[in-house]
Length: 269
Image (cartoon, rainbow, N blue to C red):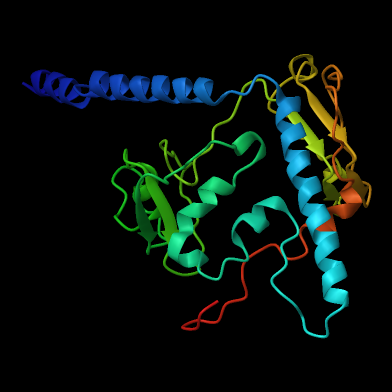
């Protein structure tokens, strides 16, 4: 009798594993297809377009500075990079949060996230149930199959108990690559005091024989406090009419007015 009960219990526990596996296989295939559809085979064309937008933004900054020098007042809102210029100086930005999806440039251009879906407000910072997450939590929003534009009811700290699985068509959606290409241009890297934390690149999840084939390049980056970028892969040929990235020394100017808006609760920003 005990043996019979044991067999029945084992059968019941394993009964849904096949269905579970099929579900995640389908999700995996959908994710792979989405990644293939979004693949950009020529990364330098992407960076060319990005640098062109930055150059136009910088030209606009210089013009604005000349205009402000002739005034005694603080002048209008100033945005010093193309993404901020897309939304930051719109006083009614909160009424159309999804406009930010149209501001993406570079490798993110064309992504829509949850633009086609409803707004999901995260109200609960807890992450206590991974299997059946509570409505109002970030995990509950992330696993929904429908497109969602996820925002937060207020400032909160979320400590994930397990890795966060995010379905497609979310504003926090991202996918990795087993053979990534990284072209770092005009960035500023400031290393901490720890001597073991000076290297910008991190490839300890793959042997050198593998990552030496990855195209990781650093161009016009500013390395501070001993930071260094270990390049790998073959140097990629520059396209015709190459537009160089702004040097890393310009990082402070490009991000001078970036970041969250200085808003006061219950007052318009």
